[in-house]
Image: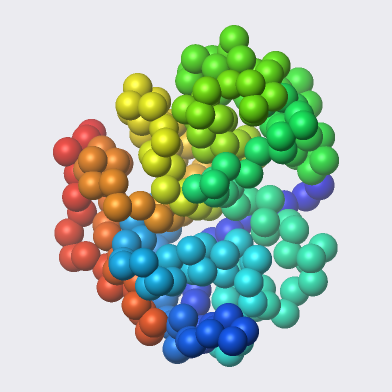
Length: 236
């Protein structure tokens, strides 16, 4: 399936409220900067998770527009949005793996269904991901039969399977083993330099990860993302 390149992501006066609840966003405006790493932070209920769901097309603004390349996503049907969605990799903080399939099958189903790229090359690629995270010995097991840290690593790795231009990670280091974190950092850097990754958006309060990656903090408010003026980084 063909996918569309993503050159611009903009929230234009976006308002959103869950049915029966108060407003989460009211006139939220932000244009995401390519080649930046953005850490979304804010107190519980500030809208971090809702913002991720809006960016994934899982929620629709009640007013305003979510634009990709100037196209209003909230006016696209499922099939019309899919070519963009294929360029967005996402890892949920609650996992997202299919429990009745092995870890490897979770990746294979994704790749087979969307049929992106050369089959032999893409399966070599995901095999390499498993080896880098020392998951080769458990990749043929179902999620319930591996450790919680192995499940977490596989769930995060799945976001890289299609080599997206936009990477959205929700609390990626929560539940991840300490030895996997620097490997994740290296993987993100590699995808930025070698595989066309343009946007990295992370919802996390993990300041150690922030320093390793070298990102900016965006405080989520109802009207804007308040970006810190300086880049935090102790990495290279």
